[in-house]
Image 1 (tube, helix red, strand yellow):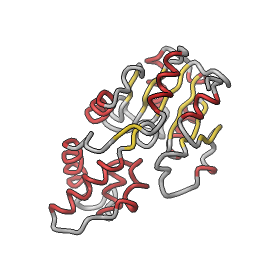
Image 2 (tube, one colour):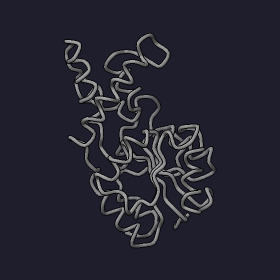
Image 3 (cartoon, rainbow, N blue to C red):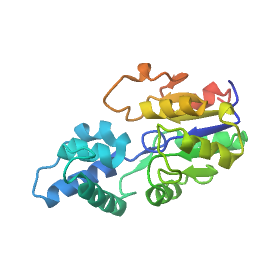
Image 4 (tube, helix red, strand yellow):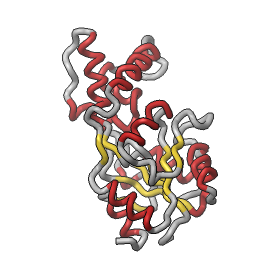
Length: 220
């Protein structure tokens, strides 16, 4: 596939480096409890998992544990107050989006981040436009790795899943792409999680920088 009908992108860890504000929210919660901060290098790899990742790394709690739900809700409230404090686009993302738009390649963003957080982040960083579609974690009954969000993105763009590519920095992104019947390209510049290496994700391509998207499409 040299020129897909559309490109769908994950948000955190793929288009935007939101780890500083996610980690900051976790440390704000620690400070409120008179606990020492967690070192940023320990928090950053978990940023792709959002609140779940930050709470797990900073507090050692997982969904289902006592106190997790209340802490997650508090985390999201704090994070919303600092959404764009230190978050920024990864290098080359703006240029890549401009080139895709100029070439007439439709762009969508599909994230597990709730829309009330994703929308101001996307708009504040100037990603919409050129992105035509934003699917959040609460836009469909399921989140990635379920294929429903990717199918919703394709439907909104008016293209078939088999003609699309999904770019993401987490194993769940590649599983979602496979389940949706589309190609998956791994964003190796992202957070990547802490489990299996990117080479084991089953991606059709592993990209070292955003500009490689254009190279694979013959646009650079």
